[in-house]
Image 1 (cartoon, rainbow, N blue to C red):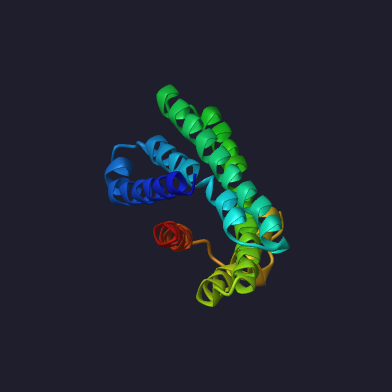
Image 2: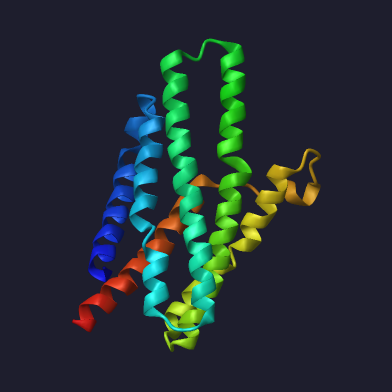
Length: 205
């Protein structure tokens, strides 16, 4: 199962790179649904990762972390798949209807916005628990990197509050969401986990 998870993990990495490389071309022809589908497939490939790390590392922290990791991935898989169907439906129906576009904007705000930000907060908690688990298992470099990723909760929490408040708060207005940064840190996070898992599989044989 570890080997299969590694293969799936690298397929997810390839899907991310395909999405990144083809993003401009797909966006230019209005195929945003395909972009979200590729991301949904990417997260699907990464679903086994928390379970494998639960087997690989010892301690109570990793057991709790597995729950947060699975929850994060399922949330992203769920929202990306729903956004795919919604985007394709709106494009097929047409975007000239003002009422339809209002409903579309409402749906996208529901399926992304606070939902995706909450998922990223959960990922930060997972990273923190992974950090403790790596520390307990004497993988200090991995622990340090996971602790660094967990600090991103200081970025995602303000964004979550900002997107959830009707009235704006000045201090929160200073925090800006950056899609490129979010995608890049997500890629780096999973790349590190997959590389470590790959090395464990190679050297355990």
